[in-house]
Structure formats: C-alpha cells, structure tokens
Image (tube, rainbow, N blue to C red):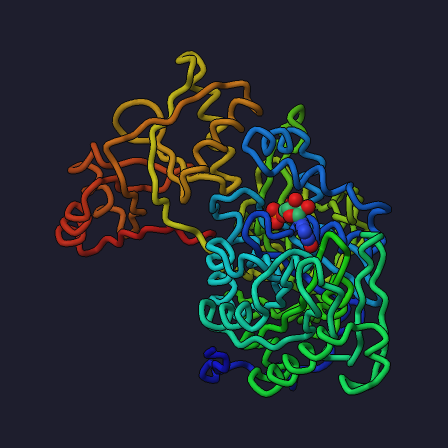
Length: 544
Ligand code: GDP
C-alpha cells in the first residue's frame, strides 16, 4: 500500500486575506458533478434536489437519467428541451446556502461543452463507483478541473454494493489523479453488510435506512470510536475493523484542511449510496461548509472580483432550438460580479452594444423561472436571437473580456451532405447555428460546394446528424474528406491573401468568416509556416 502522497506546494494567491463577501454572494456554491457514465450522477443530483426541497419526490429526474442511456433516448430528451434545459443549471437552497449545480453533458463522448461548463463553476463534485474506482471519463474531466485548480469533493457511491477495499479506492485516486485524499467519512461494512459510515469530521455515526430510500440516515453523536454507545449500533466484527481502519487512515492519510481543499491539493471523500440517500446530506454539508464561495474571474485587462458593485458575466454555453417553433437561443451566463436585476441594461462588449435583459431565466430546480434578481456566482439564461456567443462578456459598460474559455482543436473532420440536394441552404443554416452554439466547427471550402464539420469526439457527428434531422427535418450524412487538420490563419492581410491565392484548394472560411487552412499533412503546415513567416497557424481559435 503506497498511500501518503503529497503534491509539492503550488504558488497560490492567498485567499485568506480577502475581505468577506457580501452575505448573498458568500452563501452561493456553484459547482458541477464530474463522473463516468453510470456512477450515479443523476441519482445524486436527484437527491440534492430532494434535500434542497426543489422536488417533492424521487423519480422526477430519473426519467431523464434513463434517457441518457442510448442515443435515440438522448434525442428524445433533446426533443423535450424544456427538461434538458432546466437540467443544464439548477438552483436550490439547502440550509443557508444557495447551490447552483451546473450539469456537464451526460453522453459518453467528449464535447467542448463539457469543458466549458467547468469554466463556469467554482468547484466540482467527483462521483466514483465504489466497485469501479476512477474510470476513464472521470480522469479526463478531473484533468480539466486540475488545469483550473478547481476544488474537488469526492463522493464514493454504491457502497451498498460489493465495492473495493476503502484504502484501495483512496490509493487509486491518489495515484491516478495525483491529488491528496482525506476521508471525511469511513464506510462501515460493505455490500450487503454495509450499515453506514463514521463521520470523521463530526465524530458521528451515520446509519443507513435500507427500508426507505428517501429517508435521511439516522445520525448518532458519539464521543469518538472508543465511546461504548457505538457498540449498540455496530456489530462487534464490523466495529473492530472500523476502529482499526480509522486508526490506520488517520495515521497514513493527510488530515482535513480546508485551505488545501480550496487550493485543489486535497479532496475530501465521503462514502455513501446515492440511491439510498445515504451520505448525501453529509456531502451537501461539506459543499456548503468547505466548498468555495464565488471566485474572482480572470479577464483582460483586469481580474473581476465577485463583490464588485457592477454586474459582469460571461457566456459559457449557448443552447439553441429550445423551442423548435421559435428558433430561439438561450445563452447561459455565469455572473462574475454584482447584483443583477431583471430589466437591467448590460453592455455586450464584443458587439459594443447595450442589450436589455428583460426576460432572463433563472434555473430554479425543475422549473424555468423568470429571474428577478441574481448575484455573482449564479447562472442566468438570456434568450436571444444569436447575438450572444460563447465567450462573450457582459458588463455595465466597462470593456472587459473574460479569458480562459477554451476552444478546442477539431480533431476529426468530415464532409456533410444533405440527403436532399435541394436543401443545401437549409443545411447551411442549421450548421451555422450549431457552430454558434459551439457544438461543432463548420468550414466552407473556397472550392466546391458543401461544408466540412470539425469535432472533438466521433459521437458528436451522430449527435449532430440526429439534431439536424430532428430540429430542421433534414436527413444528412457525414463522410470522409481528404483533410484531417484545420489551422486558423492569422497575420497581415497581404500575406493571408497571398496564401489564399496560392493554396485555393486548402482554404476554407469558418462561420465567422475567418480563414482556415485545411490539410492532411503536417508537412503542408510546416511548409506554409516556412514560406509565410508573417503568418501564424493555430489549431484553436481563441473564443472572442
Ligand atoms: P449516471 O449515469 O452517472 O447519471 O448514473 P445514474 O444515476 O443514472 O445511476 C446509474 C445506475 O446506478 C442506475 O441504475 C442507478 O439506479 C444505480 N445507482 C445509483 N446510485 C446507486 C447506489 O447508491 N447504489 C446502487 N446499488 N445503485 C445505484
């Protein structure tokens, strides 16, 4: 067993010397859940909503969870956009906190959406399956969180089933994710013998009620593991083991340290069973008590602090066709500072124009509610007709630009063909919309007709094809092209023009009209760089 593992200390802006935030902002916790499919994200979300008083009964979110299982069901969910939209961001109150849970897309393939969602949160809850440990998608999502030093709280789920040894699970997290782990609770028994957990942070026994899945666990305050009362609840063999393991864990693993959690060096882990509502409340208390308040936002030319009086925010996601009849879009905006009120005029920095936000949407639980007000840390939805794009910054007049919203290099390129050649114009419209949503990169080659679509993960082609058919009534097919790489071209006008003139067969424009060089050979890219030293070819385009 190689448990202790301490990351070298990182340079980190001291958070402790900041002035306290206004209470309305300080009580907000904005986070996402990261997990591998099937680990229990939907179930846990549902229990969050249940204990947050946002839904009355378990089962309301479940239908949607099942809908994620297959692609066609996923599309069925897309059809019922009302549901999936409110699931994109959910707000609810729990004790004194306001939780904003931002959903990461549920399908198993990667899209840029997933990554960008993580730019809108201050923390992540990592759900792992106690029998499976750290799985591939968890690892990928974790890496993204790590890039931003996001604090991570871990929930080890399905402890009511046969699961792996507790030390083994912790060790795997430490080894594969290179983060220190501190147990916030320790499971008692496992599988059929699982009876609950010992809360190491509050010296409490939490006992699971198997009979009623939605009931909160019985909580027994005890005086440490030597308290004789504990034997009234825990059978002798399990108790002996619990004492031994906890003693070992306390000796081997780092102690809880909020600052280390906030800096992203240390993740507290709770053991539970979401479906049995077990461990969920402790996790929620943990998010509230140890999770971060709304954090400052990186921007140019200056950072934005949440407590600033004026409102700022940025678009991290755009969802179109929420109502197929209206072709409207909703831009999801994370408020970075201030106190927002309905009807406010905000300044759209990229367009250099004011916009009046008269009908913003607040995502209170299962319903879309009209937002009357919102604070830094909250997510609001702004219906619009395409003016707002991912990465856009909104302010009360200052020309700030939020940075760090990633744009990914399209790794797979395919040509898209309409099933009905007469519908090419329609298809173009659909493609432009998906490009603006950030669902794909769309290129129009200079020579020939048709479009080339670039995505990050192969499943995105299927999702796109199905959405185009569903939302626009256009059957399409994707097919291979001679190109495998796309590079955005930047540089002086004359050099760009010369490149275009000499390489017509390789040139395309993206949906913003920017010039893109398409090729299948790295050699080609090197050649252009050599012949046109004034030009810069980049695999991604900075979101503007
Ligand atoms: P998601 O894909 O991460 O959203 O996972 P779901 O929440 O849909 O759960 C996947 C499956 O695991 C479902 O069949 C759930 O009923 C089941 N599940 C979730 N939590 C638990 C748990 O604590 N114990 C057990 N035994 N099953 C669970």
